[in-house]
Length: 436
Image (cartoon, rainbow, N blue to C red):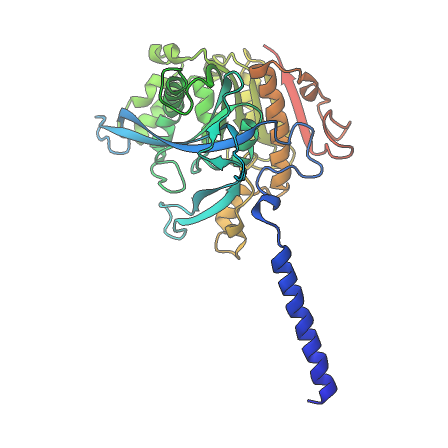
């Protein structure tokens, strides 16, 4: 190698080294990088975070003496104390020197699939772990969030953090035997979704009482509660809101569990079910609710829903169905003031966070990638649109805000730019509205 060539090579190596050092020194801290829920440049008007800082804590609850449907045999139910882990986001005070950042832990894979071993991962969020609650305002409405099957309490952090920043207490449940970590037989999910939600509502209502020792003491308005559910979570929240399950489901459940009648207490004409309809629930958001196309509800069951509902779905939903699924539920809830927001050409994943970074590592996690991703949509864009419309919907029915103009839009977004959307950005959406 001659001297000139050697010098040139050293210069190239030096430049490369300098550039690599520069990238390392100027790389953005976590707080400046994109985090699930951050507003994109074309995010609609109500998508950005609200006026409050956000704290987050984890609660472990025990619902005692519940039917252990996975161990019940020959029509004889056994019982267990059912654990439920709940993540709580709330308006908070961020002290000097602290940053409104946290990490969440979840897993990919499934304990039911040997080809997809349970694999932990972490991701960032914009909340401060164990921050002191902001008690300067009056009480905050309560929102309870129920995930899909399988899923987790941190599946929708883009939305849970966002709503807390707008003055809500948001509680997301890890439904035992229905998470990525502990997924078990489907009968548990069928039976326990609605029961878990009602139990958590009662527990948080108690925690919010002034005499409680909870950090939530005095700041929860449990009499002003909304439910948010995705997929099997949608199945659960609709039942809690008044959509009693059909006799067809009761028969299917009895066959599945070799004779158990445990789910009959959540069917339309059951007196125990009718007594459980809770007046504290003022609104429901149902993302791609599962079950309609499988006969989980009939016309009489859907008539029981009398609180406002925002349905959200993809027009090509291949899990919950659209025409015979979410859209049919929207049509059938004739006694409710309801909306249906449709993502044209989207499939089932109209609710989750974007795919975790770990799913980008080749084909190893391809099945998990499509547990989050939409093939025809940018998931971050879906997240921003959901933030916008859920903020408008819950703002109207829980906070009496004048947000009607954001929901009173032309049916097809391609025909005319929707209120609150930046020019040319409201495409591929439909929104319809029906009154009782």
